Image 1 (cartoon, rainbow, N blue to C red):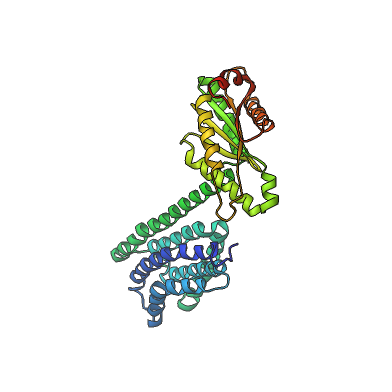
Image 2 (cartoon, helix red, strand yellow; image 1 turned 60 degrees about the vertical axis):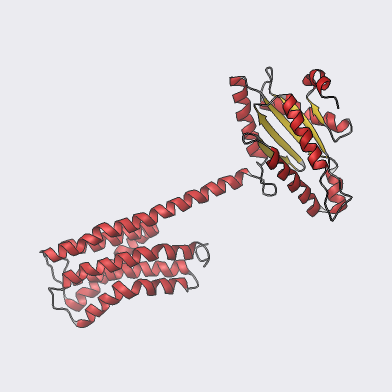
Length: 358
């Protein structure tokens, strides 16, 4: 919400503060040069000094302490436009300083509030000009002195740079925010691993690469044995700790190119690229042993075991779903065979069980 003092409203106030200091400070120089040749009362000079030097800080404090900072800052921007119109008429619409002030304020309003603030700012500038003409009369001065030309140069150079810097900073923050949101949408909140949808997307991609490049890859589906009993016996808090423990072991043991995801509930899935079944089995056996040796000091009777199904990406698989189904069938066999073991897809058992008997 824009009225959140710790959120967008307050950040909006902070974002406007530096450009206002720069803009009103150097804009004051343009106005000074313009009215120096005119017979203005002393209070006008006092108002100009207040507007250029004090108002930026006062506006910041007023908006920062307001119950709705965004709305307060929006009003401050309209007051800035009002004063811009006032000084333009006080300058007798001298073309160079007048156009400089109005153009810079229009740019600021568009950058801060889009089309809506831009048109409201134009209206405020018109009201300010009308007030000035009511006080000093309507005059037109078309000649600019060298002093007025030089006084406008800082406004034409420094202020656009300040606005550009603010816009760039905001763009970088938005890009980072978008990156974080994208990461959150792809990961499981409890384990920090890829969520179901993201892992399935990566599975499709890896399958296509393996089929095109004829490279090795293995899928592992990991199931925590009797996880429902753990939840029923010790509670869901302990169950979540078990899931977190397994995810931590995966993160520690996997290579940089390996992809781990929480497939759902107590099931985890791995994609192990450039890996043979022999190496995958050895890695999963080490994982099973490490998780099995885990002990919770507060629950010494708690035991964790894993059933794991493996499947190699091979020729003859029609799609990534068929590859996944082979690993799922291997997991089913592991669970039916007593759990706490690593099993292969049926097409691989005859060869690999000779080298790695259960």
